[in-house]
Length: 119
Image (cartoon, rainbow, N blue to C red):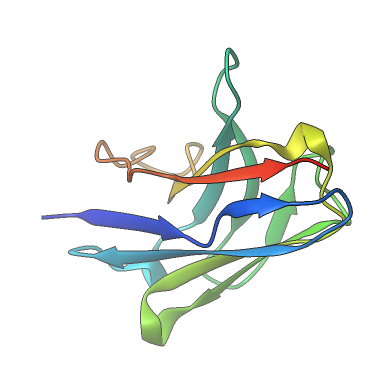
């Protein structure tokens, strides 16, 4: 059974940093392009960062230069380092396959991790 478990969220002041983790079971991250998504209240879920099997990364314009996606294949885990956080980064963050990759996203989304940026 595929399971994705996100962690590392919390409350942080503007300009602060957080590091999110996504651990997978029943699924090998290393053979898939992975992505981090976020969903703010009343908004659609958006893809903010992806990382290919070779480590190539891509970012949404809204997070470029502030967020860094990485992966540890030995731990079957994907990370999202978030720096210079802003209030509009507040959202629930999820990981999954890149929706643009073959087969699209996995049907089983994790519970997500809440990130709140506020003074």
